[in-house]
Length: 210
Ligand code: TZP
Ligand code: MG
Image (cartoon, rainbow, N blue to C red):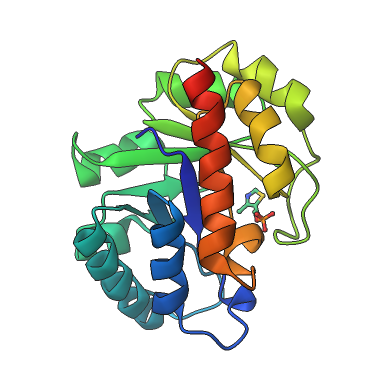
């Protein structure tokens, strides 16, 4: 699970556009992983969105992850699930999904990151890197220093998240993250394809440096 540009849904940023159009533009620009994350919809609506995104991601060879909901990930044959510190434990999700699915978990510091790796997570989300209005209950920002610190302690991929704009991407990857996860910078962009491409190109540039 070595995602370079991990794009997370956020219906609040669609501005009247269709989710499938926006996601296809993001994938076209270079998003290699899509996460379905919607906090304010019913289980039925979430399932419908998951079915749609599973279809699009399968057709485009893109990894598909469902936030929080192991049941919905399993029901639609998603590639994996993304858990928070207060969601099901990794061991329980692993028991349900089996050894081949991707399990990621949100982390904020080295202690959580080390525990995630020890528990068998395939990757960690790490952040927020910068303050972000997108997640109202986000923890304090960790900055590039926080990324460097955590990356010294784990060997699973570290996907940085939180308030990330295009101009931040190169420094984040140079600090040791393997990729960046974004909501507003891509989903909320006027030109979604161009925004995704600029971020993906920035990741690729730095990773080519070595
Ligand atoms: N987890 C930590 S920050 C965040 C999540 C889901 C929000 C990321 O959204 P944005 O718009 O890219 O800051
Ligand atoms: Mg969660």
